[in-house]
Length: 536
Image 1: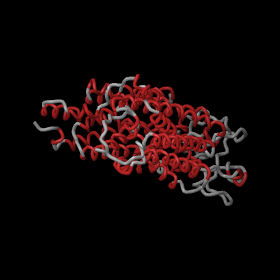
Image 2: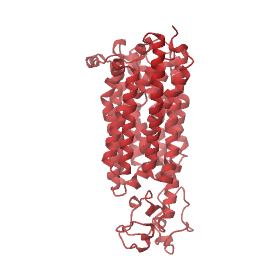
Image 3: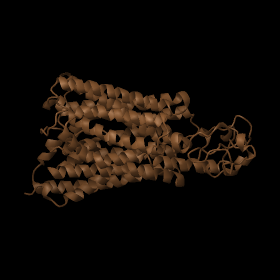
Image 4: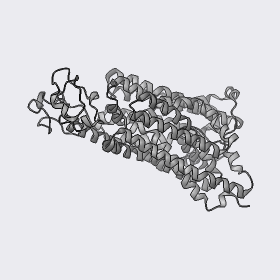
């Protein structure tokens, strides 16, 4: 009987598997694309407390994945890819449902619970999906299929960055999250179509596909950890700090870029209507001479008391103008009463426009990653130098955050460099693991390094929130925190190269020795599957 890889239907399977991942990637960064809008929606929460809650949206997502990497592959082995696709997709769908409902009810605690549920499915879905795709493709087609999977899935992140702010402007931030839920419904429906196709094909082949067994992660044994070499622990530490430069930055990038490039704080005489150079402009219908243009600077704040109660737009005319005056964190441009209020309409229009402008550059690293990641594994295997690349990547990321935090260089320069550094690091890191552990320990090694990575992704967002709370600014404090992470990555890279040299340059040596590598589990599962598949 023919194998699945001979069926023309495999391309339909690939299409459905791509759609399956879009909802996951789209919704993972929903909070990042809507950070400013969510802050306005929850304007009753003090700014420093909001930053803490926002960081928890990613911390709580990562906590389950400190443990799940040890079991995700085993579950796929035991219950099959189709059953786990259903389970993980259902968790993603339910998590986004709870998340969007929490926003609609203005219940941040419910939103946090939704992110925990979403994380249970989000990290492990790539394992089951990759296992199924691997049973339909082989050899060079497998590398192509996984490369297409990665690129299309990354489109989910790009679409989120572009679409979510637009929906939030038109219909509110809650509706933007419900659009994310709709994306998850589409992905879930593609899974519903995919399962019977795969089941029927398996019946036609009259045997279990050996590719499932070859590509699925083997059982995890915690006792294996004691056999790991120093090079493995250096790779793990490098993973911890380098991803700490990337993922937590992406989480706050929209607000950081607004502060740096799109809604900068104006000079003191230009910060408030009815004050300074706006002394004669109570409603600030236009920017006066002597004040900087908008954008990149922000619109002057309205002359309203912080004690005002505004239920309808024209309540603003009856509002006191006595101190204390309203801070920007209390202006809820997601609320019609503020969005169309006579004294806040211009301010909200400028801030919403700035948020949309800031969301677009956030897609640059994702686009670069989607474009070059499928080929970097092949290149790294031909030239070797994996340990060198693990040094160069954090060096590039350190330069990125120095440029963002301490210079006025165009934001596209550091963001392009981040996309390149991020992709190069993934190409160097994940295929290196089988070189530094024995073959029978590879499954445990990938589980351990992914768990360590998620420990960092649990802690670092909280560290960013703590640093922000010191000055209520991202620049330069938060950026210098990322610089520290990058410098630590550089130091670990130096140590890794020394250890590798002493061990016979296993990582830096060029070659294409075939290795047994299981599917990986974490937010970047598709990246790693692509890189590893490209080697065969």
